[in-house]
Length: 161
Image (spheres, rainbow, N blue to C red):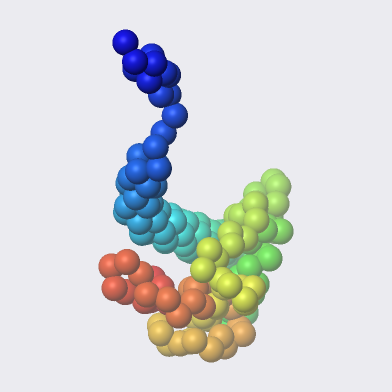
């Protein structure tokens, strides 16, 4: 028998390498858009969760204010709405002049805006501002929104959430 029949050909030929790289390139081109969409979807979920968390804390603060006024623990001023004047008040908490035997805190920390690229923070609206206002009146914090100009996967603007 000829000697070349007994040789061990365990290596890859150039053609096999080119075909394997072509298959990998096609698979990578399919996976990249899917992974980008997954990252964007996760950021949107985080934004919705952060907005819900802050808005729930603001509502709980307002409920405790109203309860403290109702039980005559505090006296409300004429122009006082009962909403916090800053987001830090939600972290610091309040005992409402004896309504609670401890300082009730509403947030552990202020959630970050996942679409905030320039570290602008949350957009704020006071009770007297319009529902779609982008300028904060400065009196109190009635609502928060993202300052991102982006458009969500479903076609809505992030600012409108």
